Length: 327
Image 1 (cartoon, one colour):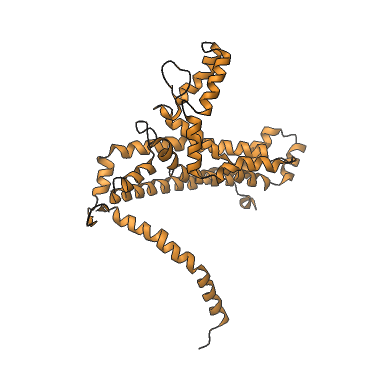
Image 2 (image 1 turned 180 degrees about the vertical axis):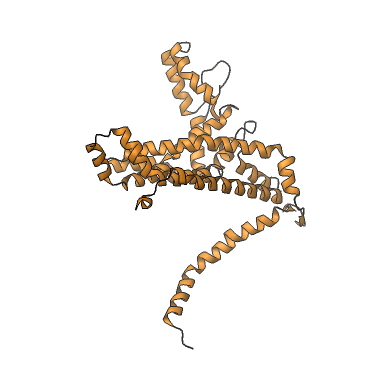
């Protein structure tokens, strides 16, 4: 029976997507199913036989009732998310508003702010390790110069140092310099501050959303006598809400997957202050070789992120405005 043109076209389409389908099954769906099975088992690949032993609920029971580090790492990650996500949203929006102007050479400023997004996470972590270094870091060297100019015991030096010491800890009892990642108190706050380095990603998405808003809305508001604040709250924010919603969802997912900073810069310390959840999963899998337990941790994280994402999606009906809704 001769092949029809429609069947031939369908086969060509399947052949085109076949590499992706095979890759998805091997590198995504396969490992996910394997990790789900392993989460109910004990599996240590470092052992000679490397056998898999069925445990049932044991990994999950141990996780919830016998592992204080589970709650500690989850709390550290939640605190990071609760602070970094609003800062990313507000900072990205502020940058987009500043760069949404028809000025000569504005493309260069946009490129500069977006540039950190294309730098690898390891390179970024090494750069900020140098910046945060208590003795050789550029930040503390600059602060010591400023304190020396103002006077170590002057009220101006103490006024400048107080918020830094409050947020990032004290280097030692006799110093006005912050301890940054070497301080128990300031290590997590330092990594949150470092997260602002990648505001360019949120900025570029917000910038695209701002440029899609019709100018006629602003022109009509100006004719009606609306000031900048009214135009921002009644036009910009409602029409930009789908973009903010996208950034919020991606921020929730990304903040619970933070790993590189804690692994490269602080190794989870000091005193587990930056021991993120993903770092704990990594250590159980590739340092302690508890693959079954690490798989259980990973699936709990999947459930947490899924629930949070669904909550954000459900809440979007209350604050996200889509232009098609008014048509």
